[in-house]
Length: 108
Length: 127
Image (cartoon, rainbow over all chains, first blue to last red; front, side):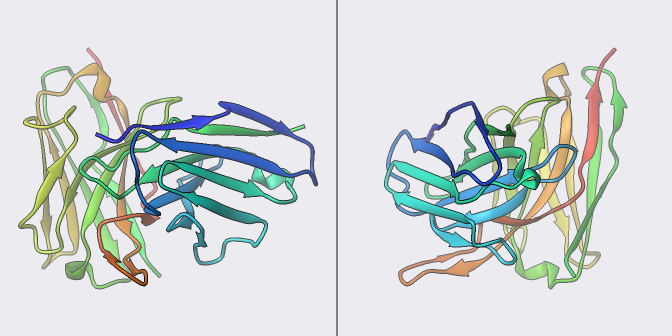
């Protein structure tokens, strides 16, 4: 089973600043990596797939990069509405489709 | 638009059974694999089970293998999760999820990632 880890667990960023979230896989997942955003009380929303492709309707301030075992989600200019948990997920080697434990993004 | 609506959640005693349903609309149900994903209170996301578009392939997380059964009715556009021998640690919001379905320059991906999610059904296992 591929284990996904995320860092940091919590990230506090001022509005307008850049946020950088990391995700690591225990073995290569190629580019088969997705990022989800889950706001408080809401359903997860797909942000990024294929490590770097924005899903439909996702603002350009969200970008993904990486391949293999190291991945990054960047939010170029954080907005207050971006307060959420962010999860990475691999769909390279399954079952299971494993998620990371999540990063909580706080807005300062 | 794509809609996934779960039902069947509730409070159940340990060892008992419960069946969740997910009614789908807005897409050609019979052409998509489907998944169940759960989230324990205050915790992260855990993939539970998946089923192929025609129901012939089924996959489970180790934590539910042998206790849960995923199935689908393509004539009624409904996905199911039969949960037996429930444990306290099964307490979660259960989401049904539909894969995006896309092709890169080298491969096509029909099982993940998940671009549509239902609103979730809360299952509480407690005596």
